[in-house]
Amino acid sequence: MTESSYVLDNDWVYERERFDAIERNLDPGTIWALTEIGVSNGWNCLEVGAGGGSVTEWLCKPVGSDGQVTAIDLNNRFVDLLDYENLEVHELNVVTDDLLVEEYDLVHSRFILAHLPERDSVLVKMIQALRPGRWMLVEEPDFGTMEADPLGAESKRQMFDKGIAAIDSLLESRGVDRFYGRELYSKLNSFGLTRVKANGRSVTLQGGTPESKKLALTMEQLQIPAVGNGLITDQDYLPFKALFDDESFYWRMYLMTSAWAQKPK
Image (cartoon, rainbow, N blue to C red; front, side):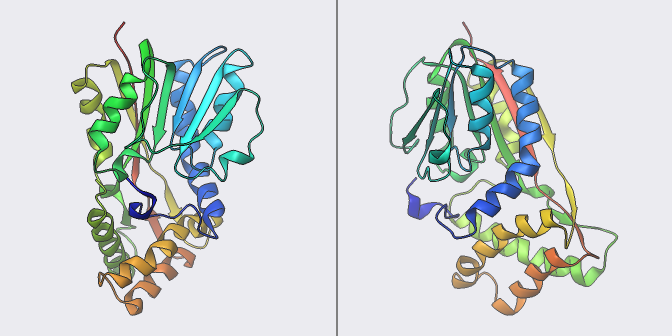
Protein backbone atom coordinates (compact mmCIF):
# COMPACT_ATOMS: atom_id res chain seq x y z
CA MET A 1 0.00 0.00 0.00
CA THR A 2 1.16 3.50 -0.79
CA GLU A 3 -0.13 6.71 0.76
CA SER A 4 -1.72 7.66 -2.57
CA SER A 5 -3.74 4.42 -2.73
CA TYR A 6 -5.24 4.88 0.73
CA VAL A 7 -8.76 6.20 0.37
CA LEU A 8 -8.57 8.53 3.42
CA ASP A 9 -5.94 11.25 3.86
CA ASN A 10 -4.35 11.69 7.32
CA ASP A 11 -3.20 15.16 6.25
CA TRP A 12 -6.78 16.34 5.71
CA VAL A 13 -7.55 19.56 7.62
CA TYR A 14 -10.36 17.93 9.64
CA GLU A 15 -8.63 14.61 10.23
CA ARG A 16 -8.11 15.21 13.96
CA GLU A 17 -11.84 15.76 14.43
CA ARG A 18 -12.62 12.65 12.36
CA PHE A 19 -10.26 10.55 14.49
CA ASP A 20 -11.84 11.96 17.66
CA ALA A 21 -15.24 10.66 16.57
CA ILE A 22 -13.90 7.26 15.59
CA GLU A 23 -11.99 6.90 18.86
CA ARG A 24 -14.99 7.92 20.94
CA ASN A 25 -17.08 5.19 19.35
CA LEU A 26 -14.51 2.41 18.95
CA ASP A 27 -12.12 2.79 21.89
CA PRO A 28 -14.49 1.30 24.50
CA GLY A 29 -14.62 -2.00 22.59
CA THR A 30 -10.86 -1.98 21.97
CA ILE A 31 -10.02 -1.29 25.60
CA TRP A 32 -12.45 -3.97 26.77
CA ALA A 33 -10.71 -6.54 24.54
CA LEU A 34 -7.22 -5.44 25.65
CA THR A 35 -8.34 -5.77 29.26
CA GLU A 36 -9.67 -9.27 28.54
CA ILE A 37 -6.31 -10.21 27.04
CA GLY A 38 -4.62 -8.91 30.17
CA VAL A 39 -2.11 -6.34 28.92
CA SER A 40 0.09 -5.58 31.91
CA ASN A 41 3.40 -4.33 33.23
CA GLY A 42 6.45 -5.22 31.18
CA TRP A 43 4.66 -6.10 27.94
CA ASN A 44 6.24 -5.21 24.61
CA CYS A 45 3.42 -4.04 22.32
CA LEU A 46 3.19 -3.20 18.62
CA GLU A 47 0.45 -0.89 17.38
CA VAL A 48 0.05 -1.29 13.60
CA GLY A 49 -1.56 1.77 12.06
CA ALA A 50 -1.58 4.03 15.11
CA GLY A 51 -3.81 6.67 13.50
CA GLY A 52 -5.01 9.23 16.02
CA GLY A 53 -2.99 7.64 18.81
CA SER A 54 -5.65 6.92 21.44
CA VAL A 55 -4.94 3.17 21.67
CA THR A 56 -1.20 3.79 21.60
CA GLU A 57 -1.56 6.19 24.51
CA TRP A 58 -3.73 3.73 26.45
CA LEU A 59 -1.18 0.93 26.00
CA CYS A 60 1.67 3.06 27.36
CA LYS A 61 0.01 3.12 30.78
CA PRO A 62 -0.51 -0.57 31.75
CA VAL A 63 2.85 -1.74 30.32
CA GLY A 64 4.65 0.73 32.59
CA SER A 65 8.29 1.74 32.58
CA ASP A 66 9.34 -1.91 32.23
CA GLY A 67 7.35 -2.28 29.01
CA GLN A 68 7.51 -0.80 25.54
CA VAL A 69 4.98 0.39 22.97
CA THR A 70 6.01 0.69 19.33
CA ALA A 71 3.61 2.61 17.08
CA ILE A 72 3.91 2.41 13.30
CA ASP A 73 2.00 4.12 10.50
CA LEU A 74 2.52 5.81 7.15
CA ASN A 75 1.76 9.15 8.78
CA ASN A 76 2.46 9.68 12.48
CA ARG A 77 1.59 13.35 12.85
CA PHE A 78 -0.81 12.71 15.74
CA VAL A 79 1.15 9.97 17.49
CA ASP A 80 4.29 12.12 17.35
CA LEU A 81 2.57 14.48 19.79
CA LEU A 82 2.46 11.83 22.52
CA ASP A 83 5.13 12.11 25.18
CA TYR A 84 5.83 8.78 26.89
CA GLU A 85 9.26 7.42 27.73
CA ASN A 86 8.14 3.88 26.89
CA LEU A 87 6.88 4.85 23.40
CA GLU A 88 8.73 4.53 20.09
CA VAL A 89 7.15 5.85 16.89
CA HIS A 90 8.25 4.80 13.40
CA GLU A 91 7.11 5.69 9.90
CA LEU A 92 6.68 2.29 8.31
CA ASN A 93 4.68 0.66 5.53
CA VAL A 94 3.43 -2.64 6.90
CA VAL A 95 2.97 -4.02 3.37
CA THR A 96 6.50 -3.43 2.08
CA ASP A 97 8.59 -3.12 5.25
CA ASP A 98 9.64 -5.92 7.57
CA LEU A 99 8.51 -6.34 11.17
CA LEU A 100 10.71 -7.76 13.88
CA VAL A 101 10.11 -11.50 14.26
CA GLU A 102 8.96 -13.01 17.59
CA GLU A 103 9.48 -9.67 19.32
CA TYR A 104 6.13 -8.64 20.82
CA ASP A 105 3.75 -9.73 23.57
CA LEU A 106 0.87 -7.97 21.80
CA VAL A 107 0.26 -6.96 18.21
CA HIS A 108 -2.82 -4.79 17.65
CA SER A 109 -4.37 -3.22 14.57
CA ARG A 110 -7.71 -1.53 13.96
CA PHE A 111 -9.27 -0.52 10.66
CA ILE A 112 -6.11 -1.39 8.73
CA LEU A 113 -6.36 -4.80 7.07
CA ALA A 114 -9.68 -4.16 5.32
CA HIS A 115 -7.99 -1.32 3.40
CA LEU A 116 -5.13 -3.49 2.14
CA PRO A 117 -5.37 -5.77 -0.90
CA GLU A 118 -2.39 -7.59 0.71
CA ARG A 119 -4.36 -8.05 3.95
CA ASP A 120 -3.70 -11.77 4.40
CA SER A 121 0.05 -11.50 3.90
CA VAL A 122 0.16 -8.57 6.33
CA LEU A 123 -1.78 -10.61 8.88
CA VAL A 124 0.81 -13.39 8.55
CA LYS A 125 3.58 -10.84 9.06
CA MET A 126 1.87 -9.59 12.22
CA ILE A 127 1.54 -13.13 13.56
CA GLN A 128 5.23 -13.74 12.88
CA ALA A 129 6.04 -10.64 14.94
CA LEU A 130 4.45 -12.24 18.03
CA ARG A 131 6.43 -14.17 20.56
CA PRO A 132 5.17 -17.74 21.06
CA GLY A 133 2.35 -17.84 23.56
CA ARG A 134 1.53 -14.15 23.16
CA TRP A 135 -1.50 -12.26 21.87
CA MET A 136 -2.94 -10.62 18.78
CA LEU A 137 -5.95 -8.29 18.63
CA VAL A 138 -7.29 -7.41 15.19
CA GLU A 139 -10.33 -5.17 14.67
CA GLU A 140 -12.04 -4.70 11.33
CA PRO A 141 -15.44 -3.47 10.12
CA ASP A 142 -18.38 -5.10 8.42
CA PHE A 143 -19.90 -2.30 6.37
CA GLY A 144 -22.88 -4.48 5.44
CA THR A 145 -24.64 -3.44 8.65
CA MET A 146 -24.81 0.28 7.85
CA GLU A 147 -28.39 1.35 7.34
CA ALA A 148 -30.89 4.12 7.87
CA ASP A 149 -33.67 3.69 10.42
CA PRO A 150 -36.11 1.24 8.77
CA LEU A 151 -38.99 3.12 10.41
CA GLY A 152 -37.82 6.50 9.11
CA ALA A 153 -38.98 8.41 6.07
CA GLU A 154 -38.59 6.41 2.87
CA SER A 155 -37.16 9.42 1.01
CA LYS A 156 -34.37 9.74 3.59
CA ARG A 157 -33.63 6.01 3.47
CA GLN A 158 -33.28 6.27 -0.30
CA MET A 159 -30.90 9.25 0.01
CA PHE A 160 -28.82 7.35 2.55
CA ASP A 161 -28.74 4.16 0.48
CA LYS A 162 -27.66 6.07 -2.65
CA GLY A 163 -24.82 7.79 -0.82
CA ILE A 164 -23.63 4.61 0.89
CA ALA A 165 -23.77 2.71 -2.41
CA ALA A 166 -21.45 5.30 -3.99
CA ILE A 167 -19.04 5.07 -1.05
CA ASP A 168 -19.14 1.28 -1.18
CA SER A 169 -18.21 1.36 -4.87
CA LEU A 170 -15.38 3.80 -4.19
CA LEU A 171 -13.98 1.63 -1.38
CA GLU A 172 -14.15 -1.51 -3.51
CA SER A 173 -12.37 0.27 -6.37
CA ARG A 174 -9.50 1.00 -3.96
CA GLY A 175 -9.21 -2.64 -2.91
CA VAL A 176 -11.12 -2.35 0.39
CA ASP A 177 -12.84 -5.50 1.66
CA ARG A 178 -16.01 -4.06 3.17
CA PHE A 179 -16.88 -7.32 4.92
CA TYR A 180 -13.48 -8.35 6.27
CA GLY A 181 -14.65 -8.05 9.86
CA ARG A 182 -16.96 -11.02 9.51
CA GLU A 183 -14.01 -13.21 8.44
CA LEU A 184 -11.68 -12.45 11.35
CA TYR A 185 -12.64 -15.35 13.61
CA SER A 186 -12.08 -17.90 10.83
CA LYS A 187 -8.92 -16.13 9.63
CA LEU A 188 -7.21 -16.30 13.01
CA ASN A 189 -8.13 -19.97 13.33
CA SER A 190 -6.95 -20.78 9.82
CA PHE A 191 -3.55 -19.19 10.47
CA GLY A 192 -2.96 -21.50 13.42
CA LEU A 193 -3.73 -19.22 16.35
CA THR A 194 -5.46 -20.67 19.41
CA ARG A 195 -7.99 -19.53 22.04
CA VAL A 196 -9.69 -17.38 19.40
CA LYS A 197 -12.47 -15.10 20.59
CA ALA A 198 -14.43 -12.35 18.89
CA ASN A 199 -17.21 -9.90 19.53
CA GLY A 200 -18.80 -7.04 17.64
CA ARG A 201 -20.02 -3.55 18.43
CA SER A 202 -22.19 -1.13 16.51
CA VAL A 203 -23.87 2.12 17.49
CA THR A 204 -27.00 3.86 16.26
CA LEU A 205 -26.80 7.64 16.04
CA GLN A 206 -29.17 10.56 15.66
CA GLY A 207 -28.46 13.17 13.04
CA GLY A 208 -27.51 16.58 14.36
CA THR A 209 -25.62 15.21 17.35
CA PRO A 210 -21.91 15.96 17.74
CA GLU A 211 -21.12 12.25 17.23
CA SER A 212 -23.09 12.07 13.98
CA LYS A 213 -21.60 15.30 12.64
CA LYS A 214 -18.02 14.26 13.35
CA LEU A 215 -18.47 10.76 11.96
CA ALA A 216 -19.95 12.39 8.86
CA LEU A 217 -16.53 13.95 8.25
CA THR A 218 -15.57 10.64 6.64
CA MET A 219 -18.41 11.20 4.16
CA GLU A 220 -17.15 14.74 3.62
CA GLN A 221 -13.67 13.55 2.75
CA LEU A 222 -14.98 10.92 0.34
CA GLN A 223 -17.20 13.32 -1.63
CA ILE A 224 -14.56 14.50 -4.09
CA PRO A 225 -13.32 11.03 -5.13
CA ALA A 226 -16.85 9.59 -5.23
CA VAL A 227 -18.14 12.38 -7.46
CA GLY A 228 -14.90 12.57 -9.43
CA ASN A 229 -15.12 8.89 -10.31
CA GLY A 230 -18.69 9.25 -11.53
CA LEU A 231 -20.20 7.16 -8.73
CA ILE A 232 -22.67 9.86 -7.67
CA THR A 233 -23.45 13.47 -8.53
CA ASP A 234 -22.99 16.43 -6.21
CA GLN A 235 -26.75 16.93 -6.53
CA ASP A 236 -27.32 13.53 -4.87
CA TYR A 237 -24.36 13.65 -2.48
CA LEU A 238 -25.25 16.96 -0.84
CA PRO A 239 -28.65 15.81 0.55
CA PHE A 240 -26.95 12.57 1.65
CA LYS A 241 -24.43 14.57 3.72
CA ALA A 242 -27.22 16.74 5.11
CA LEU A 243 -28.84 13.69 6.71
CA PHE A 244 -26.10 13.61 9.35
CA ASP A 245 -27.20 17.07 10.53
CA ASP A 246 -30.90 16.13 10.48
CA GLU A 247 -32.25 15.52 14.01
CA SER A 248 -35.15 13.48 12.63
CA PHE A 249 -32.76 11.01 10.97
CA TYR A 250 -31.34 7.90 12.70
CA TRP A 251 -28.65 5.65 11.27
CA ARG A 252 -26.63 2.63 12.30
CA MET A 253 -22.88 2.43 11.86
CA TYR A 254 -20.86 -0.50 10.59
CA LEU A 255 -20.26 -3.45 12.91
CA MET A 256 -16.71 -3.39 14.28
CA THR A 257 -15.47 -6.90 15.06
CA SER A 258 -12.71 -7.35 17.63
CA ALA A 259 -10.98 -10.72 17.35
CA TRP A 260 -8.14 -11.85 19.57
CA ALA A 261 -6.09 -15.02 19.79
CA GLN A 262 -2.91 -16.54 21.16
CA LYS A 263 0.09 -17.70 19.16
CA PRO A 264 0.95 -21.32 20.02
CA LYS A 265 3.93 -21.82 22.31
